[in-house]
Length: 217
Ligand code: HEC
Image (cartoon, rainbow, N blue to C red; front, top):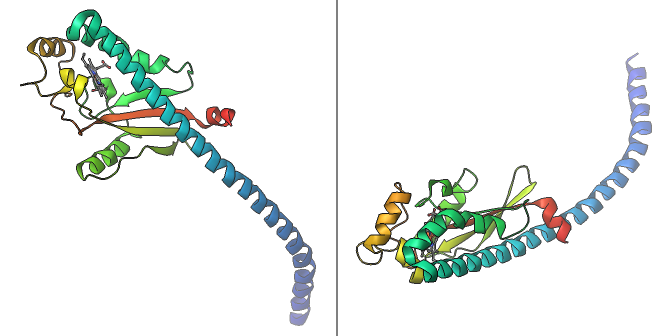
């Protein structure tokens, strides 16, 4: 009895393992081939998302500055505050003409509380803050979120001084009392004063669905 069951297992192994091994080799090669293709695509998609994120953030930054300058010329800084209040997020949102892409500027020292980083953004912003404090590089980054379906492009906004000081600089010497008054009225919880050139002001946060990136390739 014993030897019979042994031999039947043995026979079973010969017959079942032989063909299965062949199949699994083919499957293995097939999977491997697909993986290579997939890996390549994944890299290409990520590269493209990075290029796109870079160009969106540059374009939007230029767009904002141009609009800000115009608002200041038209009616001075106080007017520009009202303008930012109503339009900053709108310019940022609509500049793209692609409703699938969500773009915002976030900061822990925010003026508008709705620009507070969310749970995906907060750790990245912390990392930029750490890098700036320690004089390390702050290159833009891409993270996969929402099960890999969305790419989150982020880029640190380093405070450049200049025109920005008028509304975000030192309240004792750079921001006029008139401007401070309007700011207090519109933003009672304002935390966006006292920035110095080189400080981390916040970051661009651009959510790009993977399918939108794939369309561009
Ligand atoms: C005329 C005043 C004014 C000037 C000049 C100005 N800002 Fe602002 N900034 C504002 C206002 C007002 C808001 C809040 C906008 C809103 O309600 O979303 C703001 C918001 C921001 C935010 C979003 C985060 C937050 O604090 O809510 C960033 C980032 C920012 N500004 C950076 C800059 C930079 C960089 C410059 C120079 C290029 C600049 N600002 C120049 C008034 C100004």
